[in-house]
Each structure stands twice: as structure tokens, then as C-alpha cells.
Length: 226
Image 1: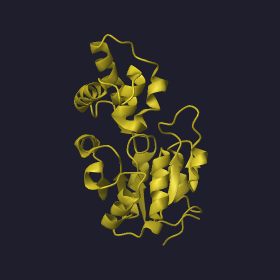
Image 2: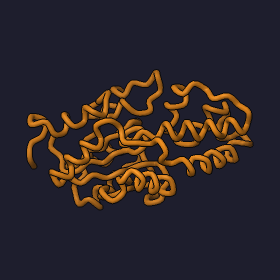
Image 3: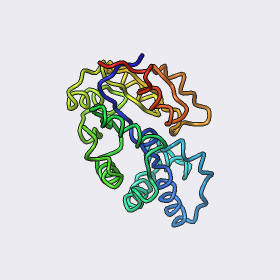
Image 4: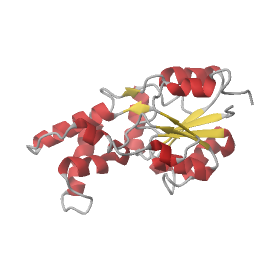
């Protein structure tokens, strides 16, 4: 049985599906440069690596290329205007968070997405105020996979790390949670590469669909009262 006092979510690819707005923003940028859009499935897996991953895949360059930073900044400017046009929580997430509310279980976000982009997205989706804490790179010295974001979220929520569960769609999320002493759930519904197997991250649980979270965490035989 799973016993926990708090949940911590990664953002992109775990709590919310930001891919549509990332794709539309990239499409606008590529059109400016008279370049065609690569297949979306090849780009989607790069979203967990942020704007750098998308630029690298879309333009076929790495971060050492002379034009990389200019292209990345251009993309971010476009994305900032489209932050929450199509972005939405993954299936089942709204119900899960409502269940947390009913049971007075706090939940937080630990993301490597800067606050400048995180805050308006969460506000637009009415997720900013309900979150007990939102930890971005702006708030820590070391980002995931370091345990600092998870530890800070636990401290703000007033729970011990070993009573929290970190949920994420990247190995760094799982490593961050494990190093903090939290239980972990690998979100295999997120932005994984086609050849990537979330089972290899050695999380406590690996789920293929976001709708499975509710049953895992809140079914009568899955969680005992603490």
C-alpha cells in the first residue's frame, strides 16, 4: 500500500501537456526562417529538454552553434505569447487534484521551466493558487536532478521527504526525488524519446497513462491513512 502526505509534480509532460503551444510556436519560428516543420513526434520528445532541446532538433544544431542562442531567444519570445492557448492538464489530472483537495493533501510543482513561463501558464489554468509550492530554477541553487527542488517543496509543504511522492516524465525527476528520499512515479505518458524506456529509471512505480495515477494513489486498497 502507498502511504504519503504530499505530491510533487514535474510540470511539462507530467502535470500539463504543453506540447501543442510549443509546436505552434516552433511552427511560427520555422516559417519565419522558411524552414519546414519536422514531424511532431520527433519534436515532442525534446520538450522535456526545454527550448534548447526543441531548437536543437528543429534546426539540427547544438548549443555551440553561433546562431543557437539567437534562435532560442527568438523561440522563447514567440512562445511567451502562446503560453496557454492549447496547453491543458493531462487526462485525469483535474480529478486527481480535486481528490487531493478533498483529502487535504498538499501538492507542489518542481520544474526546470523558468518562473517567467511557469507562472502565467499555471495562472491561466487556475493551478497557481491551489499549488502549495511552485519551485522553478529561479528559486534554487541547483536544479533537478539535484534533490534541492524536491527538498524545498517538502519544506514549504511542511512534510518529510520520505512522506512525499515525486512524479515526473524524465529520469532527472526520478533521480531528484530519490536523492531527496521521496518515493517516485515515472510518468511514461510524457515526453519520452521513442527508444526510451521509463522502466530503466527504477522509479517505485511506472505508469503509461496519466489516468492511472488516481487509482494507484487513491483506490481503497492502494493507500492507507497516515
